[in-house]
Length: 158
Image 1 (spheres, helix red, strand yellow):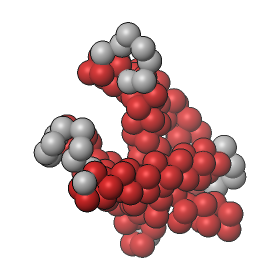
Image 2 (cartoon, helix red, strand yellow):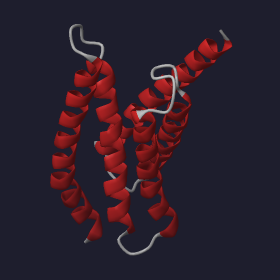
Image 3 (cartoon, one colour):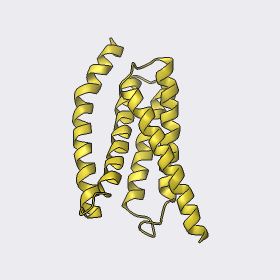
């Protein structure tokens, strides 16, 4: 019983943090970069995603052990940190590295959200729904990232 309650508390924190990260991330994607607001929202996104990944690593109710979603949470965590480190070090090309990893982190978040929604569709199997939706979102997201990030960076690197 205690495990069940603990898992639900962790799950609640996970969902609330994911929703916050979606809001922060969406706002960041569609607004001017490098501003005070961008930095404020970026910190909100970073901390929300950090909580999302930590709580994801603590949820075991679905598979009763370490599974593929835990591996994806680790990949997400590495991507998030890889996007944050350039801000601290400010080495050459830091902005490019930051942009690609943070956009990649956001794509992963949207893909995970789409998988969560797709698994709720009646008649779709869990595995098929999660795989098809997340692969589709990743392909579209990566295509848009490769198309739009260079244009955005060009504005700031001139």
